[in-house]
Length: 133
Image (tube, rainbow, N blue to C red; front, top):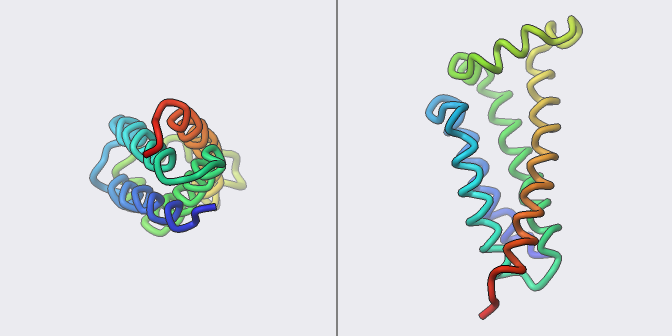
């Protein structure tokens, strides 16, 4: 496993995490993620010697941690700029309504795991498309 490349590529997730708190609107965010997934997947395909899916998956999981921590830490600012998330939190069960940060963290981790799987698939496909030097 190339932990150095996993950590370095996960910094894109950290940058997007801070960007989505107040700068990047929720409807534009998926475009950024597709571009990041594609770029990072080709970097993984070029620099790693195997286990491409696992490298992508682990990079996605580290991204998930960055994003969840930043969104929970800047909870109020994040909700002010993401009214859709605020509306979803209102519809949560009463136990989560009392602890909206916990609900946001659980939702973030769940979506993060799903996106990490997609990231792994991107890396696997990129390994089949790209050629090594």
